Length: 137
Image 1 (tube, helix red, strand yellow):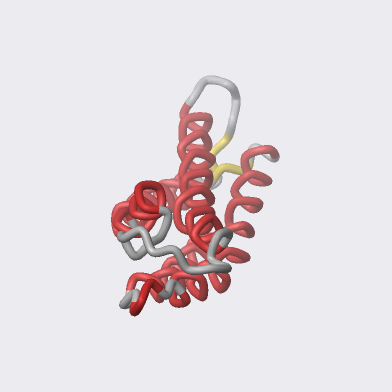
Image 2 (image 1 turned 135 degrees about the vertical axis):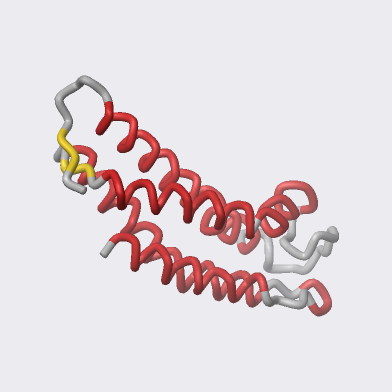
């Protein structure tokens, strides 16, 4: 279930990757972020709950690590442009009213997936450690 939610979120975020940035408009990126963020947050919460309950599915966590890594690579141009230029379009457009939109896109395209990646990596590490965690998958 978690893998399906994450892959659906990835597809929704790829809407932003099809944005043409006409006149600096970042609407496609924002739509991708709005549609995918609830799913990404749900994945993060479910992964964290599984980690806390010691119900670590190593295969599931491994697939999420690989998928998240691939996703962060695929969207590198978007979130790196926000960090460098302040807009996912890659050029310093200054459009009134967009001050929070690039931050929201960055949060959805980079911060939340990076957090999911970290939780999944910790899950895999703990599953294989000698701390008594059991693997359910």
